Amino acid sequence: MAACPTAVVAQATTWEQFPRIWARRRGEVYAFLRGGGGAAQDGQNVMLYRDDVPNVEVGVQVAGPFRRARSRPLSTAGRMTGSKRQEMPFMLG
Image (cartoon, rainbow, N blue to C red; front, side):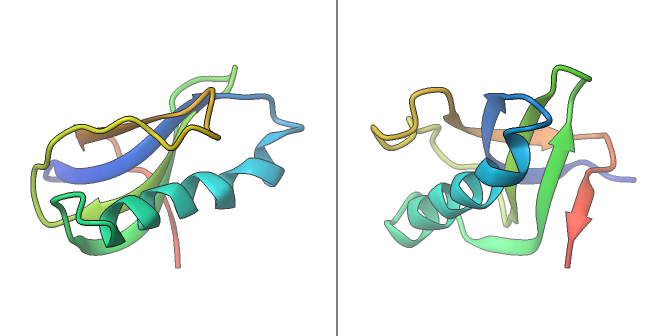
């Protein structure tokens, strides 16, 4: 599988908290893109589980690279990143 650029919010969480936070984190990515973040969605919503902590990345596939940004102030644990992944993320419809 070819690398795919993504705009994601990365966060360490717990499996108990994750179901309550993923939609908010994805919403931060959409707000960033709508606010002129320099990238356009070009694909699916993505969730990448990096380990069993879990350290997760929640966001969307984008058309290309963009400038990294900080997340909104309410997001104390997350950060907005631009990444290129080789791994196959779990994709939502």
